[in-house]
Length: 270
Length: 241
Image (cartoon, rainbow over all chains, first blue to last red; front, side):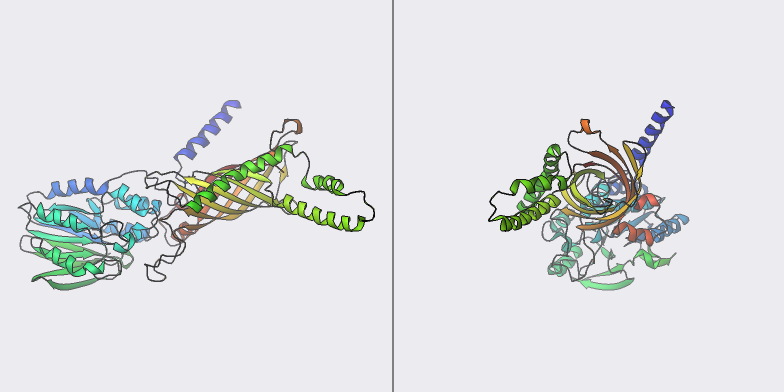
């Protein structure tokens, strides 16, 4: 009798300890599971595409509080074998809750290919910035796929209120100063496009000018307004495109097929 | 911990709350109303000519004492987890014919973890405990309790209303104030009279709760399972008065 009581108590205690139902606060930033994902996945992307001249990547964005649709998107992307990596353009969390990031990460981790995530304005709410930094790493980062440099930037200036430089021109200048010779083309990944409500529109033109200084500017890819758009743009004599990925609720992901000569763009329904 | 001065003061005042209750309870061997009678007798003087006005005055005095007595919290509580902090200390008042209603105020702490600073939280909680089953001389079991609580984070990164830099109604919710609903169970141990140190009885309880943002997420997704939106908490209640 006594032994069973002790066993029951112990079992109950173990259950409690392992149970994810124990939480200090929705914004507590207690993170379990994988961390620093961008860094790990960038190593995988760069290694798999080294020496290649063509590759394919998918873009999803604004997955906040749409777990079902995100899960379907992951399944749809996993079902095809031609994709090399996936880019998430931000807004994984709707309220910036720590658990939202972990739930979304666990869905995205089911992708067979590596993925990277930029920070969105909703990801900044409450302690969201801290949770994002812990799970994904720095908010400004870059990687090189074949001969294309992907510069991923935090553009949610409204959320930072001058506490940090957003967009960070020092980071961009450092990129320009240290551009390796094998980079022939550049793509910019961000959550909010120049001109949108959370961008620091005082530097809209400056930002566009700065991006044209990068070798072979191809396109901006962003999310934020939940619409599917594609526009041609001209700045400083450079033609480039702006592609907006819709939110995942629209059940669409973008597919870019990059070859030596150029690239193709497609919006794929799933 | 980054708190503004007013928040610091509030924090410390509320931290002292349970201690105040303990002090009250140690000397109190009877119910508040018994005490009142004694006090009333003390205050009546023998000047017969002024008796009427004195009585009136003593009635007023009694009322004041009664008001004071009712304003003193009758128990203190300690609660862990439940989305209101790692540990929360609180005090509260019970009322109703069977003391089935309880209103508590908690102050809790969220450690730093991966954020920039530790945070204090305040919780206002309303409990309803409809039934109490007496098991034996010292134990009673309350098979169901329910209620709601409002939790606020005392930190500058959180807002009640969106700061003016946002277009009005941009996010449409408050990051600072969370509303929680809970159900739970409790077991009460009545301490024998001679062994009472500061509390008359100790109640252990657990609660399962969910907050507004989790409920919204749960309703719009099949992907989420109960462990993603239900939260567990534990606590102790020390009945003092």
